[in-house]
Image (cartoon, rainbow, N blue to C red):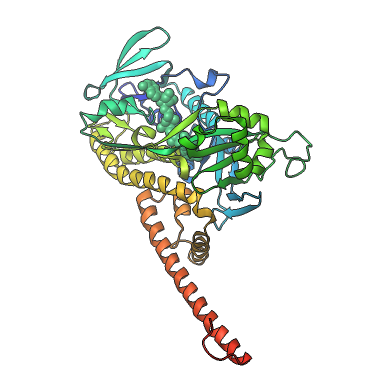
Amino acid sequence: TRAAPQAKTVAIVGAGLVGGLAALYFAEAGWNVHVYEMRTDIRNEKFSRERSINLALSERGLSALRGARGVDLRALMELAVPMQGRMIHARDGTQVSQPYGVFGECINSVDRRMLNEVLLDAANALPNVQMYFQHELRSASLDAGQCVFFNRTTNESVTVHADLVVGADGAHSAIRRELMRPARMDYAQQYIDSVYLELTIPPAAKGSPQAIEPGSQFVLDPHHLHIWPRKTYMMIALPNPDGSFTCTVFAPSSMLDAIQTPAALFDLFERDFGDAVALIGRDRLEREFFNNPRGPLITVKCGPYHLGDKAVIIGDAAHAMVPFYGQGMNCGFEDVRVLFEHFQRHGVSATDARQLGAALAQYSAARHTDVAAMCDLALANYTEMRASVISTKYLACRWIERVLHLVAPRTIVPLYTLVSFTNVPYAECMSRGRALRKTSETILKVVSAVSVVGGLVGTAWVAKRAGVRGPMV
Ligand code: FAD
């Protein structure tokens, strides 16, 4: 791709996952692309300073990646580990599988850094892309398309102008801050009480009996997302291609803060995550628990996302969400795909941006409803993962929904399937998923009532045959 001489210029702020994909989409559409990132180039770093080492990539993310010609998705997926369901770990170490779909659908565990590097490499390979690392956005006059960066290498201020500014600068976005007043943005943020902390289950040595099967280095089934649900907190683990698992503990910060000594740590972990302690190893657990950072979990809802035909925010900058549905990145990737659908609908191209304002306005209005629904679903899924997955009522409803889905795969689709394995807009997923849950709860009530009545009739019949008289207690 080469930008036409009269091609428009876009300044993308943030070279994270969503900024990386946006750079590719704009570049492949022929725009002049300038990417500004406050940190150093992740591709030159020895150690990743990123949070969440791996993440779940599902259909929405995959669909958006398919739209970027520069991404070799087949090669990428060779480095992903497919997960076909949840594996629930009880306190006594018993494991029970709960498949995600009825047709073997999988979500994919991918390395965050690898994915970010793939996107940056693909964008960087195009002649119309320039990347500026160590450039931190300090201020902007977005209605004039102007951004001021602080160059951390030279300690100088750099002012740039662009036809369009795209804020992909994460949950604490500086572009969003600059957009708030001129765009008359509504804004709400919410920290939840829980924080997260990552731990590692290392791979088994080659040939070790600890591995789940000969030739493998995995010590747990790699094709599941493992969950240790403990009602008010939980631990999860996602597989990595090297045979290790990244565990994430989600718990109230006060609970983690109260653990001050190795003895207190082992008391809790041996009781609640005993099988995992054996796999992590006590030394590693102690080292990682007391040294690894604890991350906050935030929801950000705001709108509109744009300012005229000058600026737009995407990804976490527009909608940070708690990670319990594994949708934050997927939703951010979908932002990029949907944004370009609006461009196409309005005839916006690198050389004709007359309808850009209309395209951004429509994108902003339509996307907000969907993204707000997803933020709510993500919050609700925390309860599902840490508590509901072991409740009999939940399991019964889920079973009913799966049977109904098998009978009518197109019309009756469970919420998780809609969110993770389709591109159905999130707000529609929410309403369809909730309607189905009501139906399954009603069916469950009827079945329970019928079985109670059946039980009473049966007991009375047996009692009569046995010659029992009078009321039975
Ligand atoms: P970010 O990844 O935050 O990138 C923003 C970039 O902007 C960064 O590189 C930053 O350095 C740069 N930047 C910030 N400020 C400035 C500035 N002033 N000037 C210049 N550059 C700036 N999502 C999923 O889809 N699946 C999962 O399984 C999943 N698991 C998760 C687990 C955890 C524990 C967490 C915390 C999140 C998880 N997510 C998951 C969410 C996912 O990480 C985010 O949604 C995703 O990283 C958002 O990408 P982004 O590019 O919008 O923002």
